[in-house]
Structure formats: structure tokens, C-alpha cells
Amino acid sequence: MANAENAAGGFGLTGKVVDELRESGVQVITTGNHVWDKREGVSLLESSHPLLRPENYPPGNPGHGTFRFRLPDERYLWVLNIQGRVLMPPVDCPFRCADAFLETKPGLERCIIVDFHAEATSEKRAMGFYLDGRVSAVLGTHTHVQTADEEILPQGTGYISDVGMTGPYRSVIGSRYEDSLRRMLLGTPRALNVAKDDPAVAAVFLELEDRSGRCTRIDRLFLKGE
Image (cartoon, rainbow, N blue to C red):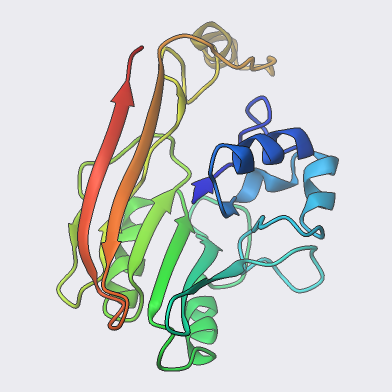
């Protein structure tokens, strides 16, 4: 899994980027509020690509926010992509959206990973406890900064507030720090160009028990350097 809402030059997605991610081994792509930034990316939401947008955008928007992998012995791994509401563009309630999704799942479909794309750590933390024992993992995305709070919650759900950014770390959340500083110091719009120095990969590794859906291991990964 990879959240790739910023993969095309820092904003949105293109078909070329989606193909590159699939060729690298990514089997499902989640996104967030920036998935709408490029017209080409929006059209891809209606294609055959395993490309998700947050499920709790209002009805009428293209695409969907769920994907299912088939596992051995007639079991499945589900991915649910939802977006928070605190300090974010207006969307439907992510908590009720998760409830509606879970109500449709039969008993054998217990392995469920949630990408919760949200700004506030309080909202992410609340979602973790809200879904504890009902999904396998709640993985926060959006802030570009990996948090050090990975854990298995009391009822068996793996949790981290933010998986972190894969990209250039000599930057301001991926953009050249010179561009970001000019925007902040002058208080007027400035183009933000993608930085290129100090690349790193931020991720988490999960192990799930396929019959119960419980998370038995969550490791935070940060790979940097040559």
C-alpha cells in the first residue's frame, strides 16, 4: 500500500506516476484531499487502477474508497481510505463512514486496513480507539511527518498517527525550503517546487492474523541514505 496523493510533482497524480508505483510493487494506492489537484488524476479514479480516494467525500464524486484483496482459503484483506474533518476540507463524518463500511462485512472478512488521512493527531487518535478491535490497523497519513507512537491498541488494532513522508527531507514537507520561506516571510503566494535532496522512505510493516484480523506486529520504518 502507498498513499500517493502528492506523487506527481508534489500535487495530485498522473497516469505515468500510477504506472511507476504499480511497477515498483504497490498493489493499492490510497490518497487524500490532494487527489483532486490534477484533472488527469481525477479521471483515473474511474479507471481500472486500484486507486482510491477517501470514501467519505459526498456522493456524486468520481471513484471510491475501498479495495479488496483475495487471500487463501476464501479470506480477504480490505483497504478503507477515509479523510478527517478537523482543519481539513469539508467531508462527511469519517466515523459514521467507517461504521457503514463495517456493517457490510461478513464475519470472515476481518483483515481491514484503514488509511485515515487527517491533520489533527487528536482526531486520528480518536479514530484508532473508535475502530480498535473492529479493524486490523488504523494508519494516519497527511502531515508528512512520521510519528513515533506506533502500537497495538488494547483490542488488537495496529495504530500509528502518521506513517510519514517518502520523499526529500531537506525540504518543508517536500517543497524547497527556500520557496516555503519566501511564502511565509512575505505573506503572498509563491510557487512551491519539489525539493530533490536527502531522499528517504517512511513506512510501517504490519503482520496480521488472518482468521481474527488482529495485528500481531507493527514496525515503524525510516530508510535514508544511499
